[in-house]
Image 1 (cartoon, rainbow, N blue to C red):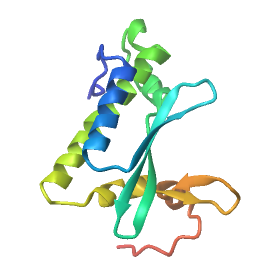
Image 2: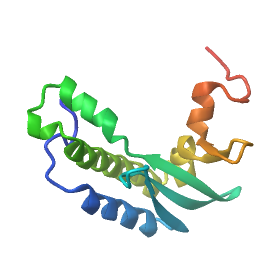
Image 3: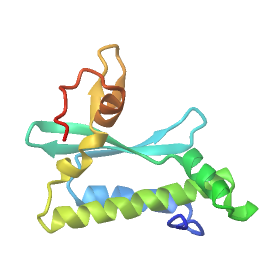
Image 4: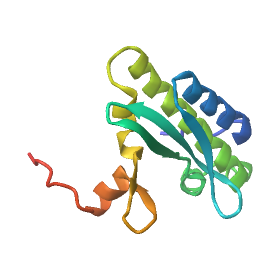
Length: 147
């Protein structure tokens, strides 16, 4: 199956602006752009009111992974650059967020519920990681029920 948004012409900057707008429109208390050491946008952080109080979440946009997928799927050279992969990654994030917000707006789930894997946790050493990172690495999580 071809990668969603693989041929987008929408710059990441425009898409990031759309994502920020969606988060603000859905009552996020704060929104930040996460950047790597080169200043490239690699995620979006936001603070959301939850039943447990305000909590911070980070939703990643992993352009390097997208680029590898574009190469693997044999897209032409112009569609396998880092810049283009960044554009595609952010379009995918936007589409995913829009779908999640439709579930929220229709009352099927709560916003914090769909964002739970992206909840930021303190690692006890001055750093942070997401709940998904903890689950993936089995960091101090209770044993899950298995079938």
